Image (cartoon, rainbow, N blue to C red; front, side, top):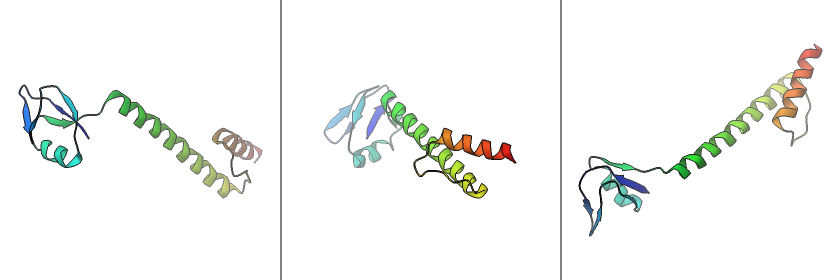
Length: 99
């Protein structure tokens, strides 16, 4: 886990120090102990945030597809197993407009 020392002083852990504003990768057990200190926080870098955002978008698309499949099933619309979201939404829209 990455941690950051937001103190104005060094913090010692074991036989090592983490300097002010320094980010260090430490094992989870040490991180758990260090996080009990004031102004020691878990650090999440920009790359980590971008990876999480990408994963979040992927999950949103999967959820939207599952919701569309549920709606199509309720309406009795048949579709291929590997249909994409846009194609399925078009089928649903066409079905609803035909009624």
